[in-house]
Length: 316
Image (cartoon, rainbow, N blue to C red):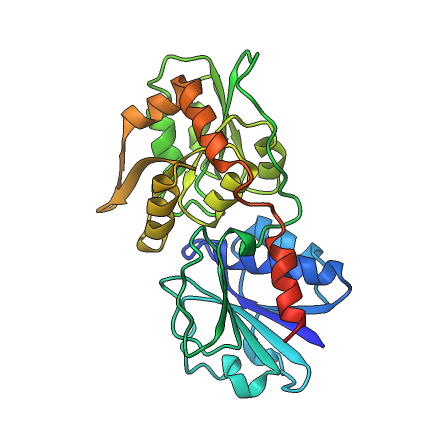
């Protein structure tokens, strides 16, 4: 059997599709399975490094260069942009098709669907089996529970990230709000916009990439968008402030906020961020609010989602 991931990443569409599908690939590779990647990712260098070193048996940037075997190949598809009529993804070409889906996924036909999120109420399509809820959120193996605490701390450790590409300049908007706050904190800012290095000494600019996992282990407060990345931080059980950049983040923004596992801090409206600075101040200054968010996250997600998904895929 061979398992074929089909997903794309770019500065404009972000890295979420590739990140969540490669978490499943990582689990399959760990189990000794042959896994192939098909998709474009060249303009996201840190992601290219992950794909090139994960252990894929082959990598194809052009889907036309890959020939599927309908008797042995299982497709794992994560996309918003491929047409449902695209020849590559047609069920007749594959032993089985698995799709990772949300509200914006086209109506791809599949043998198994995965809806990563907090809600377990996801209606199946034409009787197709759907795996949904916290037990089926795939995370890469480098993600660990966060043991940072506000108890006996000298300086509040903050991490700010707009996801894998920060297409909508979330980091810049949050920095503008943070720098107004008179408080003893240290903020690590994940961005490739090095003009932000002119911020005061409380801020440290870090290039977008793998160092995020290192600093996330000690962060006491994280600001991010309501994307795939936000689920990673909720899973780490750390206090999170989230912003909503685009329509496909709306569901996470509302669900995570209403569940009390993340704190809403604003939306990207008509090409500008409307940041709720009062909420940002509360997150920074209130250890009680941060502790409440951490408690609500506790034991919600156990980081075994990729393993459970792999079990289901191997049974197809």
